[in-house]
Structures are given as C-alpha cells and as structure tokens.
Image 1 (cartoon, rainbow, N blue to C red):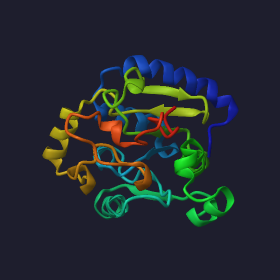
Image 2 (image 1 turned 90 degrees about the vertical axis):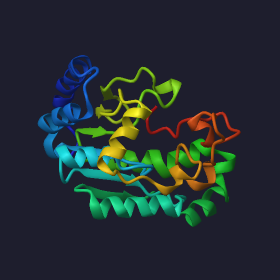
Image 3 (image 1 turned 45 degrees about the vertical axis):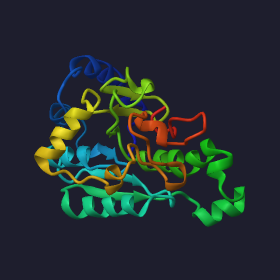
Image 4 (image 1 turned 60 degrees about the vertical axis):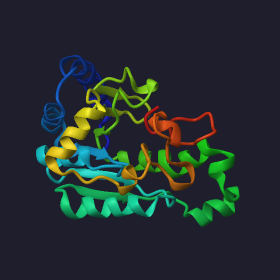
Length: 234
C-alpha cells in the first residue's frame, strides 16, 4: 500500500539525501540501496524495448514486480518481449491495462484519438493506469537515462515524485548507450527485435516509426507532433 502521510516527510528527506550520496553510482549499487530501503514496497516499470533493467533487478532483487503498461496499441514484438522476459528473467511481470479497451475508447472519444489528441490518449492508456498500479508501493524504478533526451539530462538518480507521492529511482540514469550495449553483450540481455529493425525508441505502434541513420533516437516517437514524452516521467 502507499506510504502513510506521516511517512512521506521521511521519504522526501531520504530521497534528497540519496540523490546526493548515490550520484554517479552503478546500477547494482542503486538497486541494492532500493532493496534495503523499500523491500516489498518497491516496484519497477518497463516498456519492453529491452530487458536491461529487468535483468539487473532480477540479479539484485529477484521476484520484484515489473509493471508493463499494456495499452492495447503495442507492436506484437513488444508483447512478445514481455512474454519472454516473464518466462526467462527472475522478476514478476504484471500487465496493467487501461479501464477502457481500444474499442471502448473509440466509442467514447472517437477513433484514432492518438492522432487528434495524443496527450489525452497517453493519459488514458498510460498515465492513469500507472497511477493506479503504483498506489500499492512506496517507491518505483524506471530504466530512463540522462543521455536519452535533453529533458532527462539533469534528472536525479533518486527523487521524490510529488505527483504520485512516492520515491522515484532511476538506476540507469548515469549509463550511456555504450554502457547498455556492453551489458547486453555481456549478459545476453533480451532485446525487442524492433530495435534491430530501425526503431531506436519503442512505444505504441501508431505513434512510433523507424528513425533514419544519424537521426535523434526519439525522433521516431510522435513524429510531426510537438511531443517527446508520454507523461510518465514528467
């Protein structure tokens, strides 16, 4: 369950202190800290573009809950990666779905909401379901990194998430793409097949395209729109 109100001040102070003390720390060190501090009150999320954080977490915190937001719009390869992670990595994958199916959303808001109002579509199919699923924990972890977008360049390794009133942890924050590639090669980490087919960042199928050589990795997300984030990390 979520942290009681009288615990939140302590958690805010804890997050502020950890942001300083863990700056520059390797992912396993961050994961061990998170395990020691939160135990069963800790979870992580995964988009299933790869299983890097899931594999690391499985080494340090076996059995940890991994929340996958099953939007109803995912590529078949993404769903397949989720199933492969669930079958081979020692974590507990939980598929979380929106309150409405795609057909029900189309009936309420009209078809292809992602084209007309992508922010609302992301809110309904990602942000709101994540908010509900995180309410059972005190802290959550994500696999985002500072080198992915300018908006993420200054993100702390540990912070207080005021929107969800819990601690947020980014164990991979300091890793570069080279660090990720080295870990993938060393451990044989599961990778979404789309990553080998021109997709540098993978989200919902209608809002994701391949990127050209030299193009920004996030250019394939919501192409042609003034949008770079789905709202989960902002």
